[in-house]
Length: 106
Image (cartoon, rainbow, N blue to C red):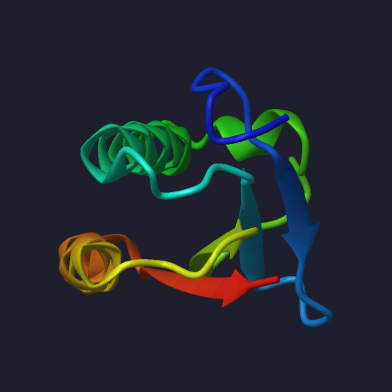
């Protein structure tokens, strides 16, 4: 699964205390077409926000009542300044869901 597959969550993980759900985004794309890449990233994050809002995770983890959510993006390539700005803005917008966006460049 990857950033290009908007209708699926690339990976899920539960914290040791069972209060946090991590949703993985696997981003293998380079930044040759930055605009298109940012649109894909936005669409993937929006899909994850919908997943959280609709509590779709309950079908996988019905026994847990998560208090926090982390959208964790794993980038294969170094990100651009515009991507950093986008992630900061998106993180601020999803705080109301007790969610944050973290990223790692592999």
